[in-house]
Length: 637
Image (cartoon, rainbow, N blue to C red; front, side, top):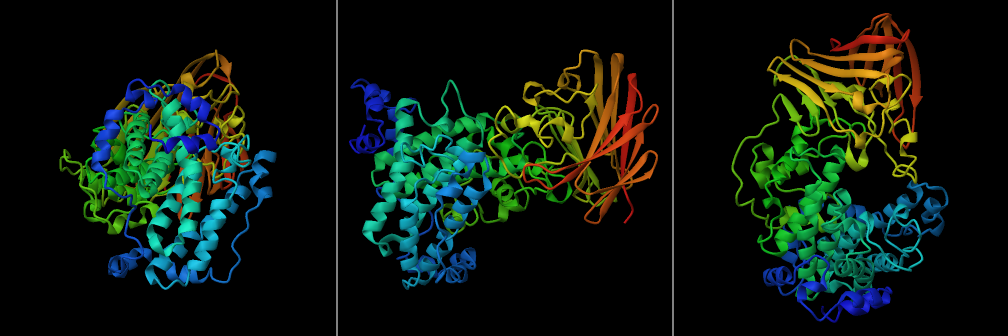
């Protein structure tokens, strides 16, 4: 263990815990899981001095290049607007609002407004190199370094960070630390040495020291996980990307940098192991862009630091994960809003293009410059930095999206029209849960016309609070099955979807039609329920059609209700036909039931998500057996 590790840990009160596990035995005992031999090997790959992406301000050739000025866009004009303005004040009251009543937006908004000044000021100064923005940069950096904490209020439940008792690394502090590290790298000798030292010391105290403690003891940083208890969600990739980026950018000791890069290599495997073999992202399309996007940034950081000798994309499992962004799309790059995915989310084309280029999977991305972490200092300059070499063992292929994507392990099917055909309708349906961001939505589906989702899963939420990841999570209709297009069976909603394994019974795929059937019975705790099979049939003929059919059997008469949520408008055309419309697109839904149905309408607005209407269709009387079918067809334009 290098001598520089101890002072930072002592300052945080970790010394006794750390010293208790440091033995003069084998070098491998210095870290909980990292191997000294691998750290030493990585150390030989690293340059003598730390560096970030791009070039420091003093390199006028780099900052005068046309491509540098293109990617930095309106940075100078944006920075000029900040001159003479009052820097947003830090507010204890706003930060503490979450600890008082569980409200997240006010404190997070305050942090975002303060952080937003960093990017334009630093880039503008580097572009001009006239010192015009330096006084304000100095003020802003001092403000950042003196903030009580960089951690989000929701991730500081005991206020240990806010009270400066002990710092922990979260999604925001790791990313912000990387931004500050990149800022002082770019500014270089234009920055006052004492201010540089102040910012570096803050990064050391708030990022590096807590992580060193965890690497040595195996305790204190939840998202690293361990071999026995791996953390496989987006926290792992996001926090590692920030911490490793900051470490390789500012830590002067090469061995020290090697420790953090070894940690990135070792622990990021937990994130990848959280994906199914078919590449499906349980957390949803938005979190794929966030989590896997940060994994791609981590890949770039480590490849750049080691001259390509470490490539996180060399794992063969990466290929299917990278293709998820293409495969999950409906028409118009729209993603079905399953799991914690906001309605209207589009596939992240920058990340998709990056994956196409690196893995040589075909598509337009193979000829596009990489774009990751837009509006971030720590990744913006990937576009003008030598691009890390593609995976050495990749095989050139043309893995286009095609007519359908079937994630067999997740039980999720996405169906699309034939290119150039008159069919405008696309659909997706799922048989399984969603891992750590699960909704209770077994059997949920969406139906879209020309990429506009008109009926089905409403997505969301748009904001979290102190209940959304606790025992009260499923008290929200947008998260439990009431707000999803799934049945209410004998008056009961679905059970916790994370405890239900996908059960796809049969699939049949042709160029003209795709069919899938799934067993929804395990999703309900209803003793009288004998069978509940949902069938989806997708036709590409003409303008296209989607048919959802539920077959239910009970041991005694029970109630049965179907739900059709929409963020658009719904109009009753006749006793069994409805019209759904949104943003100039519309479709009809024709309902077939044994003896008619009763209609209910609920307006749901929760957790910052756009309000949606839940159209409930309840069979008029209890049944022992029933078949309920809804056929969706796009309306002529």
